[in-house]
Image: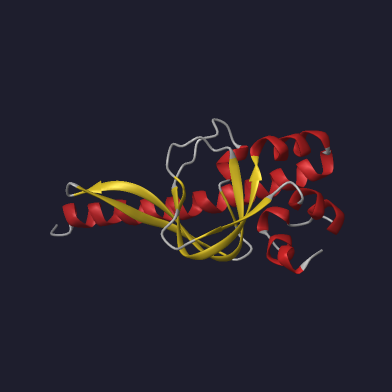
Length: 163
């Protein structure tokens, strides 16, 4: 494994894969760099790729209209070794957030088609990748639920706070 794939090899998506299996997955990708402020993908866009962040930081946000102005509400910060864009592996293959580079980034971009073929053709790799993906989706669900409950609590406190 080269020094350039060190962060990718430690990626949460690749947890539990043997070195040769990780190398097979990583070989599908293409390295790209992105400057701070670049948008990697937007909410609702076709999810035809996923990313492994090798350096830098990417913010995942939910675009919302707040008092008539479009704002990006931060949901997650992704750092070295983390994966983003898991919607590429989950139908209907539409990104559920917007990803914007916060700190100049180096990324490995894995195309959905090639990765899907590997998942379908190698049961062990497919099982481990999808198990890891399910873990990541579950973590996002917990974060989203926590944010939602906090907002509901604020609304309830505001409405019934004086009683």
